[in-house]
Length: 412
Image (cartoon, rainbow, N blue to C red):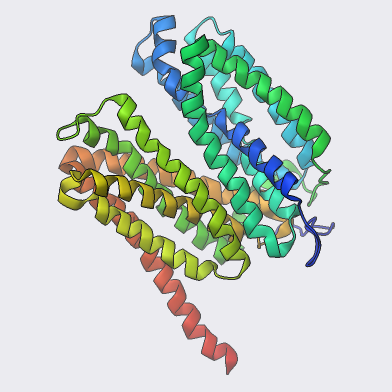
């Protein structure tokens, strides 16, 4: 049985309506960036935390694992609530819980307490994937792709700045200061959004259990969503295949780089944020299929660059990393913008289905990359990443062939 359609109209303005102002789009982007940053603050702090509590690297790494598992659970269990509750209240309440957990982390007297606080924090830190469809729903239809790209660029910058900013604050005031600052930022952000965000009444009415079950129904009934889930899975699998193993390549000769130099490769995320801004408007112009094919070709080509001479050409490796990041982040915006065209009353559930597939790709890509590097070194990693990209390109070619075959029949 199909999930019930909304009894209320799509909150998005109609064609010709002003939609979201630039200031409001910027607020959504900044809020999404600061919200998602909470998941990544801990990454540069692990050594300092291990020293404080005198625990092993294996033990302190449980903080990252708890954050990852908590965030995945939040995507599956809390993100769908955006369809049946007031989004503004949901966002504000989640931010306040995040603030409380970050304050608890700052005051933690044991690593176990820190792990538990991180798990609850990340469970409720799904504000960014709530804000993206929230903004898309408020935007005029003809600017929905641009708005999605702008908010996603804020998310990407938040991830990048969390790692660099967290390390810098820790250098100045210790790791506890990082969590204390994060807690204060979330309180301020919650107060600002409580005042500035428009009210967004529920788009659908149904019990929570039925809400979760309806995600599977939507997946079954929406072929475009299934295809975009495949694209997201493969794209993020390739992305994580790179970042799982590139540190091993850079640590060995001829590079022999230290952790600081290896970390600088993450600055490629700046290019990804730019890609997010430029691909959204292309979707608004109806070019999503063409852009998809171009981006998949770009991603496949990036693996060719990174594989030149076994990855020993620095310029090719750097260019390949930048090109891959551009392609993957641009593809994320295209996928989300296309998904948001489906079922206005179910955007949060559609985002849930897509993001679960997306993060499943991360797990598959990381696992495949680790096994590939152990078996055949960097060359095997390149082949693995290229295989993920090739699957997407072949799937896109197949979809375009089916469309071309159906078009004459529809015109006949």
